[in-house]
Amino acid sequence: MMKMIDKPTVFVSLLLLVTASPVLIGSRPARLIATAALIVPAIIAAQLCLRQRVRRNVPETPQHGPVSSVPEQNAEPVDTSPRPEVELIPVLVNQLQSVINDTETAALEIGGRFMDIVSRARAQAARAAESLGEFAGSGGDDGKALIKVSKQAFAAVMDNLRSVSDVARRTLANIGKISESMTNIREVVSEIDYIADQTNLLALNASIEAARAGEHGRGFAVVADEVRRLSTRSTSAADSIGKLSRHVEEEIAGICSETERYSSRSEQRSLESERIMEATLARLDQVMAQAGSELDAISAGTGELARDIGSIVVSMQFQDITRQRIEHVIGPLQDLHTRWQRCAAEPNPARAGNPDGDAGRGVERLEDIYTMESERRVMRDTLTGSVGTA
Amino acid sequence: MAHTLLVVDDSASMRQMVTFTLKDAGYEVIAAAHGKEALAKLDGTRVSMVITDLNMPEMDGIELIRQLRSRPGCRFIPIVMLTTESQEAKKQAGRQAGASGWIVKPFNPDQLVETVRKFVK
Image (cartoon, rainbow over all chains, first blue to last red; front, side, top):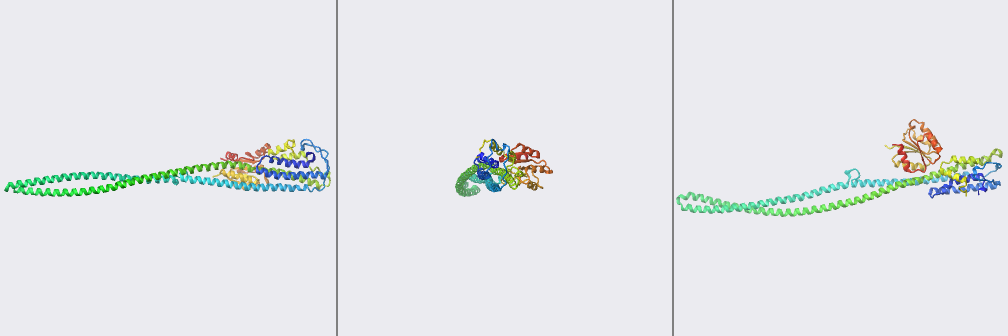
């Protein structure tokens, strides 16, 4: 194929191939788009130049080695007739520019959406962490820690329930002491009753002895009667105390029974409440542990997202790199077109100069335009024949 | 208060990505499409660092650095070039103009943030 192509053909083909070849390597979407965008104009440009050669019917110039290294000897007469195909170069340039614009717009849109997704994912993860922090007490503000507050409230309720049971137990103990005192009182009353009976018996004996003494025992009889009356009153008072103490004992027994029932119920409720609260708190802890695991998973996901950001940001830059590579094709194409126009406008071929330009300078120009080592490498490989042109 | 960085690149998608990466790292960002726009946006605003592309229309990165270095408030701020340019001669031209560092595209966002943190503390 190289034998069939003249310098402009080589220049255009080389230009496009140098730019397109690295794009063919790899499978990134941006590269594929750029590949399609570059290959079509490359083929068209090569065909245009070939047609130009056929129309001009110029014999082929034998070439060996790198295209740019061949010195320009015996320059062919310049064909200054109109070259409508060459005028299509601006179309190719505009096509390439359109590709740049379209890929730029697409990259912007993809980038914008991706960044929006990342921002929203991060915001959600932050909100989840904040909510869990408030709930579990790890959010920094202890006052808002629902679990902690709940545990404190539960503990206070449990203390109250336990204190109620304690009061009931103490009341029962006190009632037991009162009951013991009442038993002592009953024994004392029984003793008083016994003393009153004995006193009454003594008063009766004293009255008998006073009657025997006759006139001399009259005063003693009065005292004996008075003592018997007092013992009767003592017996009556002891009976009353006995009845009252039995009544009090019955009342105390009732209170004691009621208090025991209340204390038992209270203790039961306290135990039941404690069991429920402990189960509730255990469940809350379990839920929080699950939520913590979920949050860890979300955090891990966010971390992975951050790593993905890196790789995507790197990938997205290929759009910019491809844009620059295409621009490095557009510039020389425009130069080539300008030179051809200048030659076409010049009626005197001798003054028109070489429309192909200086091949050696063309390579220098490309070297100057290229910014990427990959561009320069492809050019070197192409010129030394390491990479074919077809 | 977050540091403000000036990002200059003629590629809208690159500006978008660099801005996102730096804002994500906690910096404020002013973005411009070329040197002239950067100088106009910088007028009256103090930035802690400049990250600029090299090949841009209107005013390229080298000229932007030269102009920045001639401004009283910008003589000592770090300027890092973020570009596809890999030739040592071009890097040398950037250094001579006053560039503080160089990052070759495609860059890793961590590498960019690390470089910014090295210069802006």
